[in-house]
Length: 171
Image (tube, rainbow, N blue to C red; front, side, top):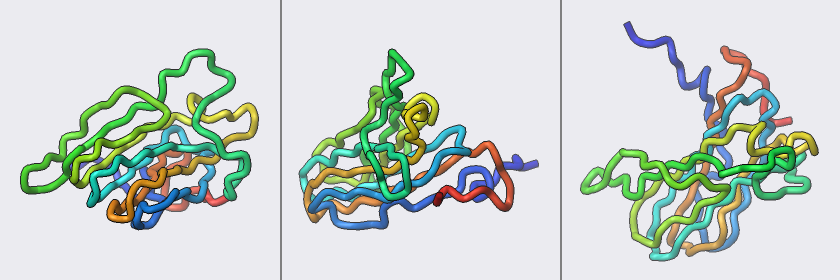
């Protein structure tokens, strides 16, 4: 019998950045993680130019990005960073679907190889958001690279409330 797991109910996708050229700085909107136990930020890159792509998850106090800053919790004294996984070449001809763990960090920069890539950040809100100071919203910033590099970002949340009608993150 198949597992009772359902992606739409248990890890609903939230679009943060629609596919677009990375010729200038891209900053997503922000979503509220107040009900999230864990979040996975999935960034896909179609690297058409040999320029690196720098990805920085950011926290804020509102949907509009008030006080946006890099991840970090002022209540923790030691913080190695979020777990990051990478597929450096997703091509079906010569690539792979194997996610390779990277060094834990609060941001990530790709190599400059011309490939399709997937970068995944695993974020535990109470570890990486400055919740004591009101930072409970998450977004992402992608530094300017090259217009031939196309990027998109999606957030998947594992929330404490699961089911057909989940609380909205757009507050």
